[in-house]
Image (cartoon, rainbow over all chains, first blue to last red; front, side, top):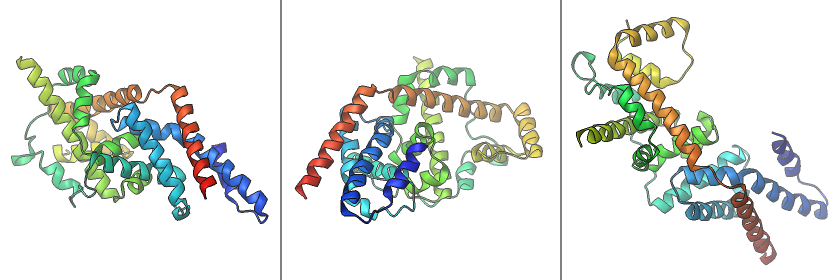
Length: 203
Length: 82
């Protein structure tokens, strides 16, 4: 990423005050051009309609420029920005932050199995499942039913290909938490889709 | 032979498995209908989500450009105030 190098070189403070102002303005522009699209896509992927998504991105930038002094370069600018996006999205949805119970993934996996380690409710025939996953409306409805943290974890993987440690920073969770979040999200989506498939077939 | 639980955990971990583990996993999937179904469901889910996210985030570059301008204008205004 050549822009990243640009950011770094621009970020070096200069001694002359004239020279200092110019790079700061230029730096803002570079950052805004670099990340607005990703943020907008992130907001859309979280299920906000385009108007709301635009508002959301604007408020992310407003906050970013307000608190940028707190940004100490310990994480990537992109991670910092998506962290703000996540918090803003949560405020809008009025969702509580800590919905991640302190669970172990082993326990979650166990809950899918009954006596002698048998599947409690065996997965549906993939043929029937496939049709459902290709029906955008259906999968979107199921996705809308997920808590924001779960949806955000999916989005970050899909949209911008964030790595695990970035996603953990953005959601402010541990790696174990993230594993649980993703497992739960998938389990819920599978259940929701299976439920809808069965419901359709009964009609 | 792996148990179904172990298979679900392995499918979840997303890590590159050592060859022995991978063979054991494939063997189980070959013999166990439920886990095979589970494994293909996960793949379908992933594909479905990728397509969905792509279609949802397909924005006109013009919209992005306008938004960038609006954001930059707001920042400039605020800077002048200071």
